[in-house]
Image (tube, rainbow, N blue to C red; front, side, top):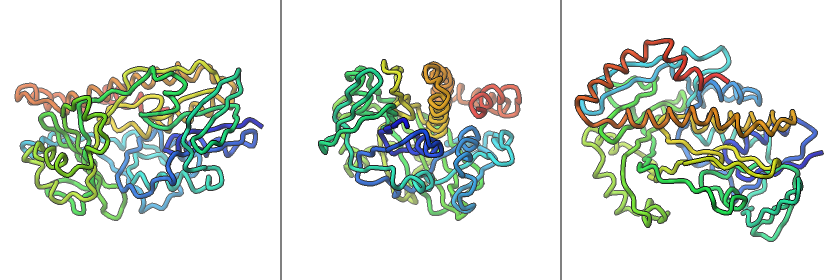
Length: 381
């Protein structure tokens, strides 16, 4: 029996643990640095059909109907005029059992955790990774050590495990944007709260979408903002009320009313990956944001974490793990290019380029060939 250690109890780590749990040839343990998994986050995530299809392999379609939502369209709006630009039918990529899904992140984590109760160890902070041929020894800050045959690193964009094996070669970079999250208790006027509403503004955009059939709405805004190196390293800064007030003053006037109704507001800098790191040991693999973190403007973070985890699982199961890295890089680059392009297009400020963008958007959302290339190549496994 092969022993598999998974560092990080996020979406990718928990998902791949569920996959390996179904195979008696593997013994798995998930090591989480925090003292518990975070179920308090009411914030939403979007799952495109590529990830829903894979989640269904471990029973995702059996989640209570009211705890998730299936939007049919993305409605594009001009933030300045509040007028609708166009709509994109994302349901065209749906199948009978796999539909574009929005839900609370905590709902997904609870689902992924429910069959792993005895396989998750919390308060385990990694301190050292020793590699001897194919045998790997992990040391934790609590002085405990364990040996494993495979090490799967899924501890996020600031992965300490990746730093340990790469000697701090790979660092995430600040994306020059701040993310502002929250929940809305009521739907803004003149939007269809059964769809995803995307408002495009100057160096700013925000998204509103339902996360269940109870009327709960998720809000996320992306604001272009420069931070000094010192500010980027000051993690407490984004809990400082004076700093938060300073940032909120920069929110476009057209969005001010929304922020008055926003609950559970949380602000954080967006860090993304600049390049890839391939472990030299063929028994060590990275998934999720530890593998690569995208700009958030294509809503593929969670979906690609799930997709990458499934690809790695199948590679290890079929003894083809040597192909995993290169295959994942190809898909990752496709998603990353689209994420950057979306952010650029969403934040245009010049009136002429904004006008031309809106004309182009109206045409592209109806062009089946374009949609099949731009979205279909990502949404289909």
